Image (cartoon, rainbow, N blue to C red; front, side, top):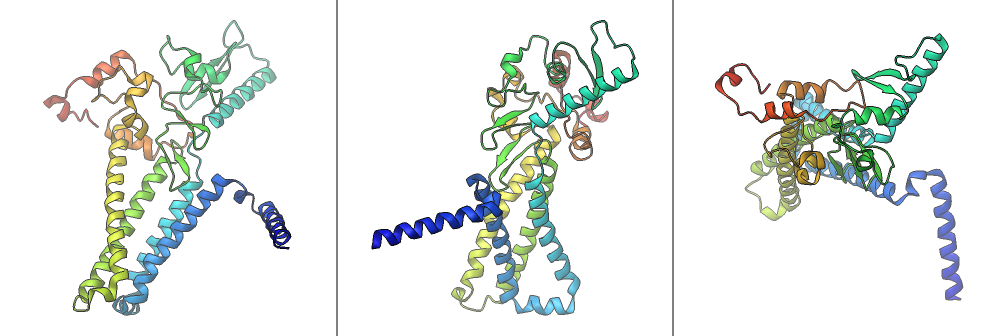
Length: 344
């Protein structure tokens, strides 16, 4: 009787889970289910930290009645931080396969336009010249993507060494295959477990802004917690043990967020990624470059512009610098360089 009852319950549960997964496809995948659980946990954590404060701090409630703009600004920052989190998590980091598809489709459309206009090809072998993000490349016997990517490497580079064994696609410089996402990422920085996605060329800027907003929210909330505890310092400490524990957790999070924000700000100003900085000796094209030389650095101002403003071309790829450019970058700064703002 007990065995049949257990079997019935198990079958009922399996049928219910199957029916539930039909309506919510994201819950049928364990990876997506884990990422969704993290997002729900983050929202609950934010609501608990802010809700406990407004539940216990009567002075803050009174201040809200007198100065509603103060709480309105705090709530706006609170909502903007959560929105930025979900926008960053939902933004594509820039997949190499998507870039390859865009290049090949653009090449095919250019070839169709050329054939429709019945114009002669740009060279004797019938190749077509296409421009992508200011770079011209030709379609000959090789595919458009292969031609474009190989032009970014030195002439001695081999396609066999640059092809991802998992995606079977030629990787441009600064890209890497992420085993968590199972895709190659343009300008790969790291895989963020908290966001449930990779950080790459497509969402690194949004990730930085999320860090800024989360840090600001954490600082403001810590100030509110500290103000409450100072005004109730005469009370026994165990009366506010919940707020003390939350304040300690906020301080730990704040230290982590500040360090992470400063670290990514440094990476942005030098046009590096976390992967390039940490795994520099494992990256083939960076092994022979001195430690203090940043091959993709174009000056602080130019780096900031490329990071913040030059995002209209989703699939912007950078060529490896030549030996002359590396020699120029490795040259130590002089007084005249500082006066001429060479670092900028």
